[in-house]
Length: 388
Image (cartoon, rainbow, N blue to C red; front, side):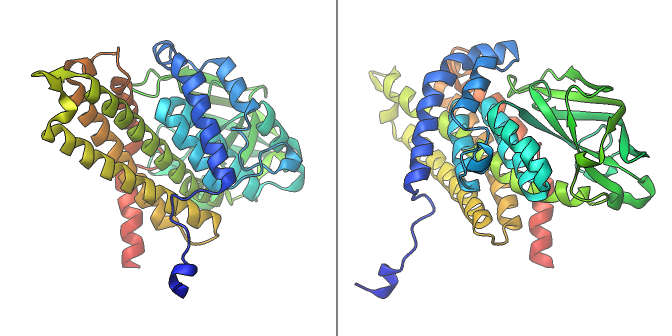
């Protein structure tokens, strides 16, 4: 045997036994428990609390949390597989789990001290949903233009301000809140704080009425003289920008996984439909024009999946992944929109109704090019890396 063949590394889509088990378990769960609830949750704009409890019971809310803290003790790539499989059925559930694992838990794993890990990781693995509170009315893509203030108060801090577009806002019990300790210092004044939902002065405000991922709560947060102790600072004072940047870089891979799952789900529904729907005396899937549409979509979905998997594998390996994460998020979100739209075309008039799931997936796809960094921000990141 050639040494090159003998030493060849497995393909990106070749899974370990543990990864395959996670994937199969989540796929079965999504089909059995999420699919029957998806339409009703979308209409009610609310996540089923029983479903959230099941996500915790399966270990899907603490994928990377070490077993010593009650988590599954798996890697980042496994989190990506989980988000992808959930999003095949309902991207709203996918993003709830994504924010929990690739943003909130990841931030604590990287930046929390031992006391904070002991206090929070078991709860995040067991029953507490987390949320990431960075965005404000005047700080979207310009994330560090935030105005929420952290004022020293004895050995602690008092937080005042308003946050917008906070995913998991309704369900969360722990919020990672970014505030500035000194606006004159610019991004160097930003600090990350761990805030519990029941803290006096902390209020979850308006829940947005959205186009898609409607079961996922997106809320404003109001902070009015919210006092936190010194043990609630995540990382160092003035280093919150590092927490935010590193967390978002990783979280974008999770959004890529969400979009790949969404696109695959739409394609799966369509492949089944075109083999059942008949026109001119035969299944429309026998027409070459339809077959070419399916082939093009399948190729795009697989290309997006490879970009996402590659970025996740690099992350787990401790290798640079910034450019790959931006490419994965950029391409997968655009693929999801194209594929969902083309799937509706193949469903014809039925695809335009809420009786078939592709309509919901089409609405859900739009947010992919917006949150956790717009497509233009991803292009800017990629270009900077090319031109440095």
